[in-house]
Image 1 (cartoon, rainbow, N blue to C red):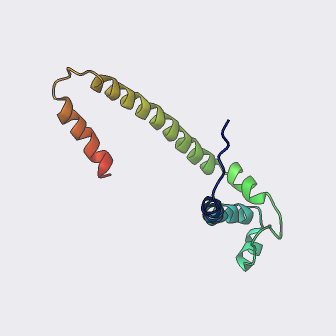
Image 2 (cartoon, rainbow, N blue to C red):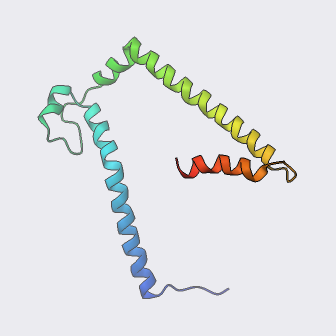
Image 3 (cartoon, rainbow, N blue to C red):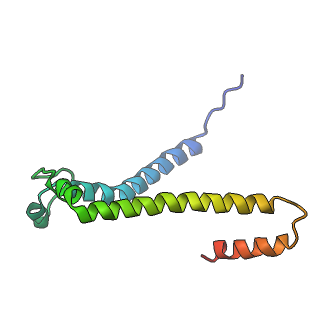
Length: 123
């Protein structure tokens, strides 16, 4: 077996690439983490600011309030229902159209493909 050895330039590229990707990952994920930390903190304490990595006044009251609110429960059910039904219908329509367009002898196949692809490109 032949063993491939990385050159010095490849090693430097890997290190720089890893640092850049890790930095982008932290920059992308930190706002989500920050919102999660604020949700675990008391509201009045959150307004003071200065929370960076851990909640100062830990509480689950915010989650209890949201999950026990009947309006929020209804909103979540509507959102989940629309997502599930929309996804299922989208998959069914896409599969049906793809099956129909898989036939070579389909009349106006190029025109139909153009009508389908234009909204995908210019969304």
